[in-house]
Amino acid sequence: MIGPHGRVVFSVVQTVLLAAAVTFCAVMLIGGDGGPGNVFVIAIIFLSLSLAGHATFLFLSYRSARRHPRSP
Image 1: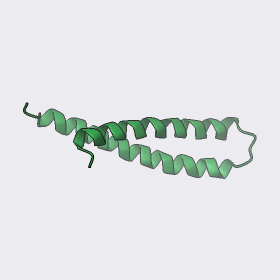
Image 2 (image 1 turned 45 degrees about the vertical axis):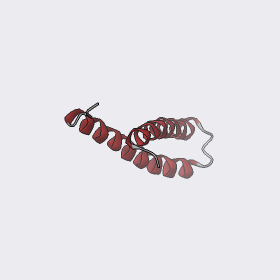
Image 3 (image 1 turned 60 degrees about the vertical axis):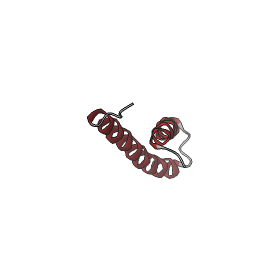
Image 4 (image 1 turned 180 degrees about the vertical axis):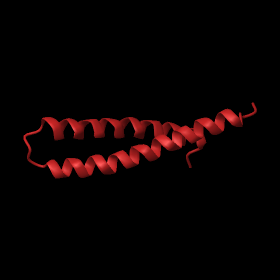
């Protein structure tokens, strides 16, 4: 099982990868040859929703850690 700290690290990694994927899709949509445009639009929507979920998890984890510090 992954502990709370492992979940945060895993979520940070996923957030970075999702941000890169959303950026790639946006660049391909804007600068592409106009071929699979609908695929990139759908990918941006779903990847952005997932990115928002991970960012929210990180924000809530950070806020919870500040309010309830762990005792050594």
